[in-house]
Structures are given as structure tokens and as C-alpha cells.
Image (cartoon, rainbow, N blue to C red):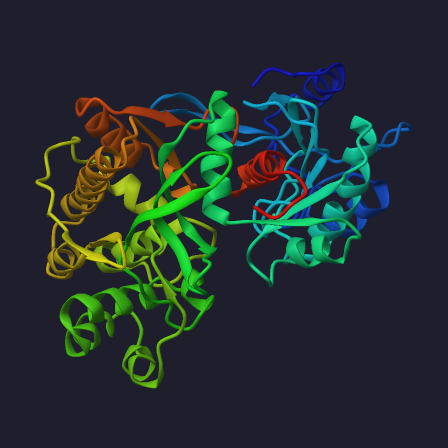
Length: 445
């Protein structure tokens, strides 16, 4: 990089050796922006600290962008982007405060026909991040001259952002997690017509008490209807399954081939699998993010994740060794339950359990997920009379999967909207919440 400020220029000139540049924070915590905090948290980790006589008022992380299947895509919207307003695709007279999700939290406010989102705050399960969240809730409305009339929050009752919202003396609008994902992409494109939203992520709290994450929603900013979803399996061990992908491998192999097959195939990853399968299930989830975890455990033996998304990232990197289209997709089972199209990847899971070619299996997984997604989306779009599909949720940060789905749908004549300025992950949830609540007004939608 080139020095971006005079201070960087002076440092580079004085030191005359390579510098390691990263955000000033411990992993999963917000960046330090006061001298005392920097000394306490970062002092043991660095060679020196450079202070200034002008204090930093508001912390702001680096933004992250990448080249996506449909052009430039923001993955973390922060310095250089926030708090730039984004136009709402409808008239709005309601001042909304949206408090976002639990992970990758941002907040947002509406002012007239604009929505303004904060910088990246982080994961609220960490106390420093929650304190930064409280600071942002106080700062952003004042910065924009907004007095909130409505507060929008996620459906999940245990999110700290939800609990905070419900303690405010304001009318509260609960916005379904995946509806917010779809709405955030619509706002990104200045659109508000009915679309087929394909929302794939780690998980979001569903109205039925299960954890959604492989959703096909017919939606606009006003409301949504669940038209289809990936089959649900137990989240073995609860949130522990997020950190230990072998648990999802056990759940999916049991679903696809039975308990004996699960014990035989997954016990090499973790000796606890047999006992876990016998002692209980856990809440059910349709998450495609967790399906990626299961595949990574089966294909590359990833039994524990040391950072978020590690299993999926490794699986995508492995698949790059095989050209797109070189692996023949495994069709999924399809059935109808309670008016919804259910996609069951059991045939794919069975194919992965016996795979020995790791790059080939990783490519097979991506092709199969992409083919099944596009096939179902095409059928649902035509059945519901919509001509546009939205790709949203953290899973669509996967460039290979995004390209396969987008190209397949476009060959069927379906327009595809992918995220550009608004992150597809939970960093965009506050923008979607704000749009849904503004469209609905103070009354619950």
C-alpha cells in the first residue's frame, strides 16, 4: 500500500522497513480508539504506541470489499462508506431506529427517504462491542438530527440488540431476520417490487421457533411469504455446532443415511459423536451455512473452527482447483410440506461420505448446491409470478456459489440482484430492518 496520510508517510520514512498493518483490536473486540484502552489491550501485542493530542471521538473499522459475481461487493461497510445515506425505494415519514443483529452488528436510522447505517460495530456477545453499540445508538441519531419514533429489531428474543430495543419507550417492530436480508438488498438496488429472495446464512430465528438459514421467500419491503426451504436437521449441541463442524456432519449423515452411518463416518473426527447422537437432538435448522460446515468436515476433516466461516472458506478454496462445471451436480430430493417446497440434500451428503478426491468433492458440493438452488428458485419464481431473484445472506459471500446460481438463473430469464453497497451478511441487517419498519409504520406489520 501507499501511505494514505502524512503521518503514515513520516512513519514509513522513519522506520524504513516493512510494517504490519491491521485493525487496532483483539480478535472479536472493537478497535481501541482511546490512549488508555490502547495501552491496556494492545500494549502487550505491539512494539510501540503512537499517541496524538487530538482524541478520536468515534471508532471506525476498515471497510472490506471484493469483486463479486455481479461486480464490486462490500463485505464490511465502515470507514469510507458509513455514514453515507442510501435512498429508500419508497416515500417515508417515519423516523426509525434499527438495532441490527447480534453478529457483525450495525445500527441504522431513517430520515425522510434515506436510511443511514453506522460503521461496523462487531459481535455483541463481547462486552466491549456491546458498549460500542450503546455509544453508536446514542451517537448516530444525534449526528443525523433524528428523534426515533419506532425501533426495529430482530425476532430472536435472546439477541442483546432485541432486549435493548424492547426496553426503549418506543413502539417496537419485530423484523424477521431473512426478510431483513432480502429488504437490505432491495434497498441497495432502489427496488421494492415482489421478488424471490434466496436467503442463505448461518442462521436466523424463525417464527416457528426453529433456526432458518436456507430460505426462499417471496418478499418486498412490506412483507414476505416462505415459499421454500432446505430440509432441517438438529443443531447438535446447540451453538457448539457452530464452532465444531463435525457436529453438523453427524446430523446430516444421520439424516441422509442413518445413525450407524453417522457413527461410522464421523467418529474419526470426534469420539463424542456416538454419545451425542444417542443423548439428544437440539433445535432444528435449515441453515445452508451449517450444511457447508458439514461438507467441510466430511471432505477435509475440519472438526473445529478457530474463526467464523473457516470451514466454508477452506471448502471454497479447495474447490478452486477444479474448473467450474467440471464436476457433475448431484440432484437433491424435493417434496412439498405445508405449502413449501423442501429441498433435501441427502443424495449429496451420501456422495460426500465416500469421496476421496478432496478438490473434486469440494467442487461437487458447490455445483450441487448451486444447481439445486437455481432449479428450485426458477420453479418458485414462475409459480409465484415474479421475474427477479435476490441473492442474500452470508453464504452468498462465496464467489463460486454466487456465480453458479446467478448464471443459472439468468439463463432461465430471471433477473438476479446481488449485494453491492450493503453487505450480504448480518452487517446489512439494520438497513433491512429500517426499511421494513419504515414501510410498515409504527404499527406492527
